[in-house]
Amino acid sequence: MADKDGLKVAKDYHLDAPFANEGGFYVKGAGNLDWGMKKHLSNIFDPKSGNTVMFAFDHGYFMGSTAGLERLDLVIPPLIPYVDVLMGTRGALRTCVPPENRKGIALRVTSGSSMLNDDLSHECLAVDLEDAIRMNADCMAVQTFIGADGQLSSLENLSRCINEAMRYSIPVMGVVAVGKDMERTDRFFKLATRILAELGANIIKTYYCENFEEIIAACPVPIVVAGGKKLPENEAMTLAYNSIKGGAKGVDMGRNIFQSNHPVEMAQSIRKIVHEGYTDKEAFEYFTDLINK
Ligand code: R5P
Image 1 (cartoon, rainbow, N blue to C red):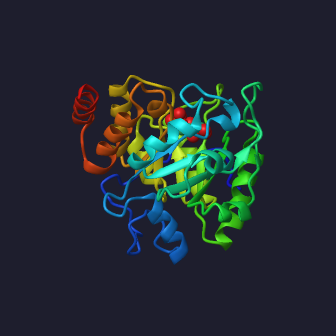
Image 2: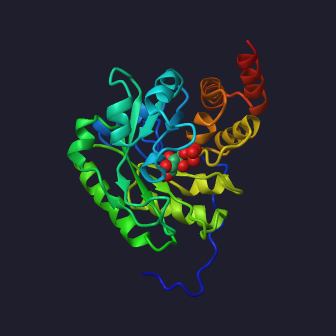
């Protein structure tokens, strides 16, 4: 391991230069992967726009019944037409998501914490590879806790999952967690996203922050941005717009969709930003028109 003293600050991100190793495939960092991996990634990232709208409803894995998700069976089906990927636990997917849907599946595979604990940073790999294959998952999502107590075990979970998933060409999404005592700076997100990509994650889910373009440039796989706590709809659209403008390949949004008074219209409007180049203002106008119809 390099000596930590006297390290130079990384600063040359060549923001004007596109990713240099596309290898004839449109998903960043996937050019050298095999057909099966590329097929799964194509189920996640739209081949036309290159982007994705993931709908996250996995909150129950540590929050239990969550506002807006009290009835998974009622909330999820109407949203399915307007999103590209359904991100949930195997319990929610098997019980409340019709298998006839044609959308990508991001399967949450870690668990072990609950809202009753102060330290949420300790998780285990709870879903094995065989079950992910049975569910035809397009990626397995592993929560990681860089800089927190559970860092080592979460990176071990991630590495074990990648080792297994590689055998059957299933992509792994590394999820960057932010705990209550953890910093939310660009320095932190640059560190965390790059660590997960270097460990072999094929997609990184993280948060938007300042200097986001540098985080994108330094990360050799696609980044999708988590929605985070519920915001007014126009602000959530600005978050999505800034993320895409900054180089994210999509959003993985939960509460800002399912806690909206108009979840379907919200998903439709976010889609316009992610896939059709709408600005946040245009998308909000579209949203307003939809809800006033
Ligand atoms: C992440 O670990 C959570 O379980 C959610 O998947 C994630 O936070 C995205 O949902 P939200 O947009 O509500 O933050």
